Image (tube, rainbow, N blue to C red):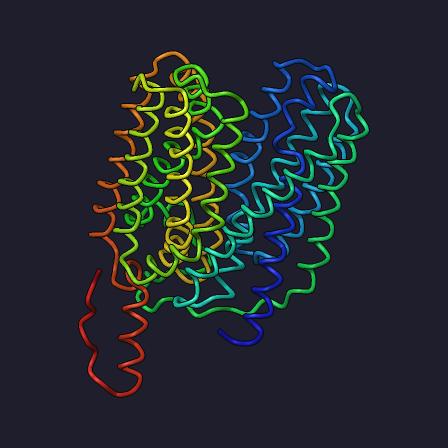
Length: 428
């Protein structure tokens, strides 16, 4: 990595931390703000959450093409300004129409930030440094969300609208501060993996859909987000309360255990996964999450003591966190390495679109199922987790060495560059 790439990457990581810190101020309290503080009711609060998903689904197909044509930095700056305006107006909105329009702007801006920042990380990293870069991004995002939520919880007062206005103003300020930070970034261009499929900058969705490995990864990604992230605050939480008798404080402890696992384990896990096949790492995550669902099954269906049920439920969230820590240096770099040169923005946007679809469908399916059909809920998502393992192993058969084992490809390239014969890599 060159000095210019390193300087740009540091600013990108600062940007990730700031955006997550700002989101942490408001995301946990959005429902309470709309439904109770503004007195707009549960229906409007539910619509606000739906608007976030719908706005993301609308803008992401266009975001990828804009990133390809204009570059990630201008798109990111536009998204940040849009999100800042949405956050500020949401804190001042007093009626349902204003709240929904503000949520749409905030949701659209947040959605576009993800692929834009991911593409900047791709452009400022090499095949050898990309996994560590995305692991750092994920670590800072979770740390920022946790710290922001903790501080926001001490600032907010459900009896005072002004305290929520302050939270949204702080969130908007974080986005605008990020505009200033990112405007100083000088974007270098990173060389791409040599054997990635060739394509021009004027690629289309049709060309992307013709990449069978990318299509398989998108299917795998949908199952990943549907079976894990889409259940955290919906189906799994409902299941814990209804089936396992988990208290709200224990649910908060479980969410904290998830974040703590990610923060503590991220770089220890990185050393383990970055020298192994990406497809096998993802397959391993499926098995870990299957164990997590078994623990959830024991919590709600095992008829043990309440203390044991709570411990098992907290362990479920911790195991999910371990899997997330393994995925962060694996999946995002794989999306980048599947993209033809100049097309990383479109591929990142496509994968972000798949993520949003899963996060929209997951709670809609898992919420009612987890609240009422306890055993079928656990069995269903246990099977989805095992399906992750099967899909990952199938994907591995379609990947090149450079895509599945970038460390091995880089080592071979160095040997050839020195004039030696390429050696066959040993896979883990």
